Length: 488
Image (tube, rainbow, N blue to C red; front, side, top):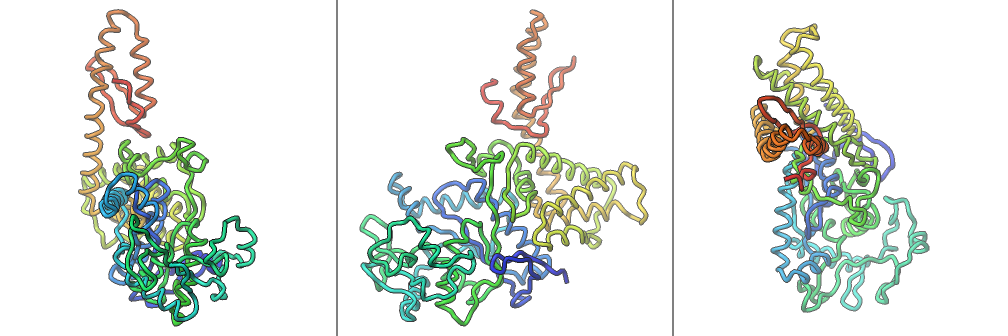
């Protein structure tokens, strides 16, 4: 069996992954707060842990892996959005979850086995809070329930901080109902205008951290294998999860392995609305950038390093997508794929080494190059029936990396052909405009307008073909429909 090695944030080193039970491998990942569209940074943990989920299923079997990712649908941001729009909170969260599913599906991410909503597990949270109070790890004051941080001696071990250092570096006004500045909220009161539930401490709602502890316990148990999320969650969210979970269930160890992905940048800068480089996943999809291109760009950088989205990487990913489709299209003409032969150890080995997705994609590209050379006759292989083997390797590698929503070769080719046809049709109006401009220019001998139109089209990634037969426009690498606005 393949040995998977992962960098454990808890031990700060790469370790062999040894599941608690190989027939029941369990993973929990912190999901989104559902009040608006998912931005590109939100997609990174989805794709990182989707690859890990695929790898675990590949090694241990699909039925042996349970993946849980929650939806935070009770939050002050959601409440504020509801107050500003006058819409019911459930309508907002249902709509946002629908958007999230559509966008992540478009990136080829498999849906987790369980996607619990916080509002549907309030009872489990109340029970856990009651237990923490009974054990002396939490206290109630002025309608709030707070976790007593100093009651858990290992607090700060995950993030490598001591409680005293945290207090010394804090610049936050301490609420008068806290025994200690580091104590955090498990339950807080709600007024008549704010969503809430009845509890032993009055009408209120849970704090943020308790939801993940309660839901992971109910769905995965007191001990499970992997807990993941962005590194911005390591403190305080994950630190608080560990404290309250280990105090509530001392018989368990909570998560054995912690994985944290680094953040995303755009052209070397932090993504922000003030810099004008903030965009959602839907923005990219609506620009005509295929989901598999977004996926390959994101996975081209190791999860433990900052991911820098650039136009250059986007173009490179588009070229790789086209190469894969070209290779499989040409292979399809004279082979019957033999999936029983599809064992690409290089790709699996790369992913098993702490999710080295960039190396796995390199191996995928190498397989495509070799396949194309075999088909063209530039490479004479040393074994029989090479093309079906190599083509099968490419497809099976796609399935482990998660290149796209790939059910088989026919679906892949049909989807790419349909997408290209749609893009060509969208360019027909510009072809008509350029053709009319050229006809007029031939009479006036002034081709400056034609040249300017061609330059604008090429800047948008459009391939311009002009002949006596007419004007043909084709979407090329780096095609960006947004750059065509204003040309009509």
